[in-house]
Image (cartoon, rainbow, N blue to C red):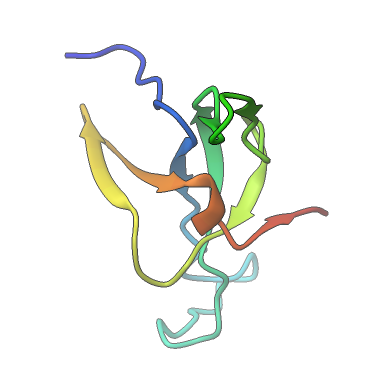
Length: 97
């Protein structure tokens, strides 16, 4: 079993952030409520190369919160945890507080 997964090229390993199913006061939230499909970046690859061989770095870094597309990504299961691999250009935005 791999202890650390390091993406290749311009791929990004993301752990999806599960939205709480109830509020702090105990009110249950419906599953159909509008929620952001977001995740936390766990690891990034070194980047891709252009036609001339120059390195194009990945636009996010470990620890960033990102907005994910509704579909896509490759599911990866390491032990009990579930992660997703996305290409850098597939990530829609970074989220800031």
